[in-house]
Length: 227
Image (cartoon, rainbow, N blue to C red; front, top):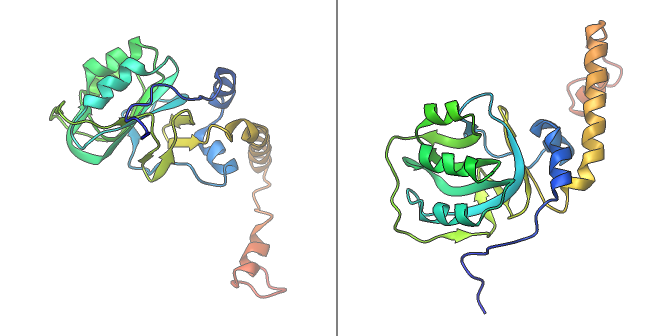
């Protein structure tokens, strides 16, 4: 039996883990995840103040067609983030004010589009977090099928339904559903360590202790040499 194009439900990261992870910067999570999971930098928030955290609800569409996004909105649950593989197409927008208003009303945590949005100023005024590869005034068609609840590739990263996803002005980071909880202790420790390092720098301790060794390992300095 073949897998259906629309998978209506799937395991998600628990709400408690989402709340805990949402306290962290995407950059911190990417660091402790092995410096991976960050979407390509072309996928940006419509405004620098936008941020979100939630569980990925994945949608794959044909470029310029948003039929499956409407279907996804009727299936997604509060706290989900629509993660839309729009194939990076910027020739027409996939979503605008009307759809974003509905997403906000439905309690969806945000929208990430590897494609274009429109009505950006109105969406910014709504204070609803939308991250996209760009904007375009052209509207979409609603004619072509796609897939919901399947793994997608967005911004160079594979996203599975139910994964943890978070975004701020630096961009968007995805962490696998079965991995996020185990990363939280390391992420929380990194926050404390970085705060301590910044405090030390502010008192004059600006030298990077690891630099000389790294330069020697890279062959820039010979043994016994210093900067």
